[in-house]
Length: 180
Image (cartoon, rainbow, N blue to C red):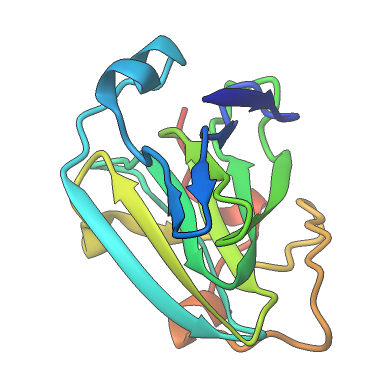
């Protein structure tokens, strides 16, 4: 597995070794020993699978209690996946990283605790799988406004995104409850 650094040192882009031939391909999407060698430690307790149509934007979500580290991969289509540092004491507080993930590339993104996460769908549809290090806890979930000018994410969207009611009501970073 190859680790590709991002502008946020704790957020890691992972490029697995893919073995393919005329029959298809195989790669390890999770191997505890290999991921620990890469500095990714965490007990995964929940797997999530979402499907969204083109133009859907999900996020930017994080949980203050029961915080989740997430290992993201796309199994159909393509997304622009984003992590935002929401740790007030961090030198990169409020900074973001955006990575295109696709089924074709097999790349994965590790987003540790202390970061908000979201993505927008670039293909006709996309299916996203992610492993989480803690259980979903709606009462502890927070949502940043997807287009907060203070953060300034350059979403590669054509027009306005399709948002859930929750995501449309996200708060700006300067008003948000964040990690210390």
